[in-house]
Image (cartoon, rainbow, N blue to C red; front, side, top):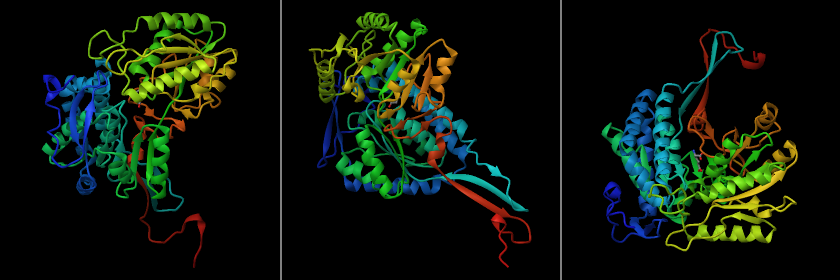
Length: 498
Ligand code: UN1
């Protein structure tokens, strides 16, 4: 599948590679055919881009925030205009079904709207001073150029969660996309840069594309970027976190998830089954929020498994740009190997494959959505690992405490959910001794978080929060101010010094 023949997306393709520079081929996971060849950044072009971002920050930070919001509003409108084509490009480049490609661009439009509103709400607090004739308050100031490292699985939305907020906060963004999804990045950044430039603000949105050696390592060590927001594996995040910590920079990390869904005995299965099917098999299991573990009350576990197996039989696997197909390919052959490894390990550890378990012998990186039941001991070591593929491991429980302990008993802490009609069970799950994840849902699945809430997780997921609520604070620096408008100097803490 070439892109040049696809009139809808062809105009978003990068120009021909620059002679003498290192290049990379971009393959479609749909059939592993070449979509395009891109030119990679060098140390020198990286330097030029970051210097431009630093320079743009110096003036952008002085533009009134509501006016910055107007630029973001225009960018949101631009994405509305290009939603169809961009969603299609996402599908071609990373293998999402078209509905999910469009859904992802919709997240970008929505976070832009959110950011426009936020541009008039970057509130600081005013506190009562302990001293007479003093005002004590805090302000939020722009932070600087923000380094955004994104993964292949949300090649458009995760950048927008960061860059749209950063823009209204008065920051510029230097974006390093995944080498598996550079085309969506080139198109998205070009749209934002074009709109902002037209409105007089060039280089608020910049892009660097390259290998970790040339671009990634440079970026995380770059003192000019006070915040690095990185999405990807726990392994990557540990490396980024330690390098940024060395220079006392800030990190916003969105790393792996090993998300569980608990189905209690009183659950409404008409809600639970479709939520688990979408959560586990949707996006071919390649969301950080994918449901990877299912923990079901022992009295209904056989029934739930039966229903899931029947539902999985309906899932059509294949080219994600063809309507009706619900499961697209994995991103590459390495992911297919990861899938095979996990299935083999699960079998070897006593798991039973109830559905799927195989790869598909056709061009592209297709695997069957898979359900694996843990042995009676409830022990299945492979389920502790995050395999970025559509594999659901099923466990059973007797008491809610046991279910919550199983759910929390992994290294990651991103998303979680419980299906129950019991108010007590739901509230225990949401309480201080309940789910230890950044996201905990009742009668809703683990994936598909809305942009309005803060998104992120605990433990090895990295602790960062982005998108809605007050996540914007990560993109600004807080300054506490004391203003004395009296005539007699008063020291704090009641100190007399005369
Ligand atoms: C991710 O998988 O990296 O909640 C982000 C969701 C999406 C975002 C997932 N809104 O599934």
